[in-house]
Length: 393
Picture 1 (cartoon, one colour):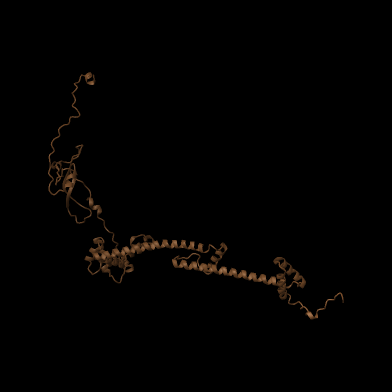
Picture 2: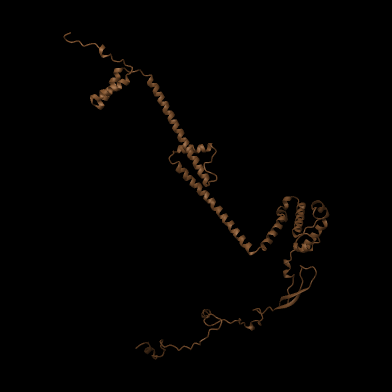
């Protein structure tokens, strides 16, 4: 008995999970012409349409307020703009809510900006604005055109009666405006921050800038490649100079190591004397430009100074030894001379005791005695010696 028997359910009421439903036959689709196999495999056989499908009824819907309280329509209505002074009547589409058109100024009238061109009197012109290259009539025409065309100097140069370049017109206008600002200000410091006073117009620089810009735009491909090579070479030289500064620092560090190695045998006192000698000669302890040749010369100078100090020390030692030897000789000459017999006893005894051998000692003693006691009286000849007395005598 199982749960089905308890519940009274038939045993085969549920289909077996092992039974598989028959699949619908897959329709074979042929790859269209002009489409690669990889693209067709990525799309899964469902290529998008060439033209987008849009529901036309979507455009026929009217935008309505969800609360159904406002009715919005678009109407072709006239409008006026404060930017115009000729009262020209124009039309445009306007969004109307509940049949009430919008009021007020034109939306884009706020972008109409006018340049405040300075005005001058005849007295101011005669006092501050006289220029030998410009007449008063030309200056008046220039300022009238600047006010009319809002400082569009290309248009002003086209309308100007005499043959003046754009740069000349700019230079005259900004020079007059700057002079008027300085003349009307209580002090020059009050208008020092004004752009016309702070940065004056440079006509020569403007002409050169336009000439260089025209040359840049008119150059060929070969000139562009050559300029690119020149810029790359300039960049390489700049990087080389920056790296050379680092090598100068490393050479200065290497110089310190070489100086320590050269002065390793000398004492601290000697090294200080070398530094003092360099200062006395007017030479810096460290080179200001530590290049390879300068470091080598500096190290060679230190070695020569160290050699000089060693020679001076040796000369002082020799002088001290000579002084000590002279003083000892003076003391020895002031002492009294010893007797002959005493000298013989002093010299003969250690020689006989030290070497041994009677014959050798006597021969050496005779040789030394002949040279040492040269002042002693010679021995009498054998014929003049007294004869010894015998017992019979």
